[in-house]
Image (cartoon, rainbow, N blue to C red):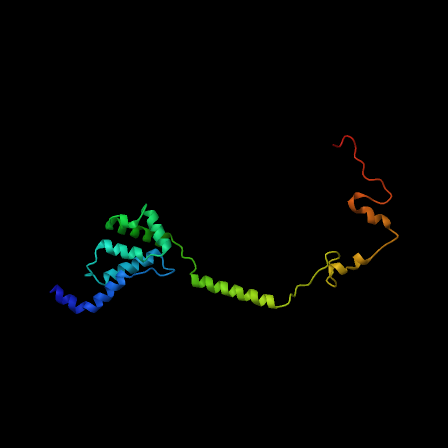
Amino acid sequence: MKRIFLEKFFPASRTTSILKEICGIRQHTGETLHEYWERFNKLCATCPHHQISEQLLIQYFYEGLLTMDKSMIDAASRGALMDKTPAAARHLISNMASNMQQFGVRGPSPSQLLTELTSLVRQLAVGQHQPALAAKVCGICTSVEHPMDMCPTLQETKSDQPENVGAIGGFQYGKQPYQTRPFDN
């Protein structure tokens, strides 16, 4: 009776297809550990007569993990996950998956990051081809009518005020330099 039921609802071709999916399951980029674990369990439930040992099921799941999740599971298992019993490994993965579902935060996918980066590069490229529209302000008189090296203030020479020339460094023409007092050490 059981065999007739299985042959009717689970033909050999369908069973073979599901078995191949179970053996070759892979975590998708951007898929959380919880989502991958749920997908794996649903896949196994679609073929209850798969006759794959628990040890092999855990191995297939583990081999399909992304590197980061694989490393986290190994760290949580204090070594290699495959050194644990199948029941202990399943329990560990189940706990980690449920914890990640409750507390995990999904970051932007690599394709979203690539799209943002491409947009920024385009904006930068467009900005380099446009002439600079910012006004250049003179650093001396703050006028926008001329550059700093052409400032009229620099061009003025007053020969009737020679004491201004020596003012740099604290000296003024015709006056004594600042004398230090003996008690100011």
